[in-house]
Length: 314
Image (cartoon, rainbow, N blue to C red; front, side):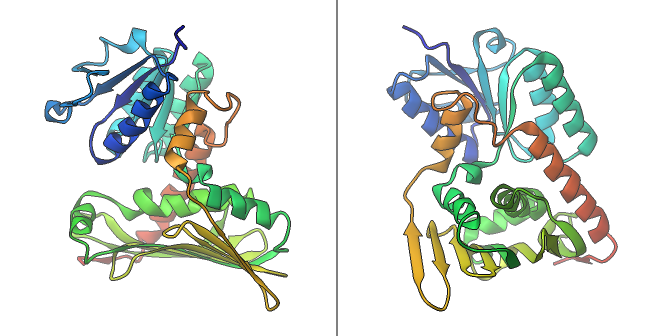
């Protein structure tokens, strides 16, 4: 018996291939009926698995799919997602929903008008380590007082140099920190200071911001041009401290008396995909499109402030 789950993945590049691999596992488990992949670059559509149906145009499959996962460059998100929603296809678009507030609002409106689900790829909301941190904050830590969030890429790794030329740190990794903080704290930060380092092409390669979130002082830094790799969120609370380490997928809870370490071995991307296609929980709405819109609004405002004093030409 067919489940009615027919998925289209748009974009078969670096991240798209990872996403496709997860959907193939759902084919193996008979959770999906069909998997289509579309990319304008036909050289990326050479799959050994004949269960993956490739297509050269969207119109040929839109009537046959119930879900679409968009893994294309940010600049293409608006038009692709708009087409999908207008054809009543449930859509998960990788972050950011767009890089433009007006476009993001229009997509939200279309989804509401069509009564179609619109999700944004916020993979860390489906991480066991992040969910453990969310749980601890509601039980043991006490009121957070100081939060340091850091997401740094090592420039000495060869492929990072390519990333520097092609991506903006604001939309690529700073948005992860913003999203995780909202999820674990159920609130958004307000920023009093922001600065950044720009490339000659105008892309932000580093972004640093300070502000408050709730009653806590917040410091956030993200960079493509560090000589170290770091992905951490440190929360200093009234009773305990928490260190969330994404590289090691661990959470450390401690104070002067004791330290507890929690280690996890889950697959957040698969968790997100399963929630999207309704295999686990059809009411899971933790990555709804309106959250993606809020993040676009905050980052757009930050970038407008940073234009006043960036250092250029690094």
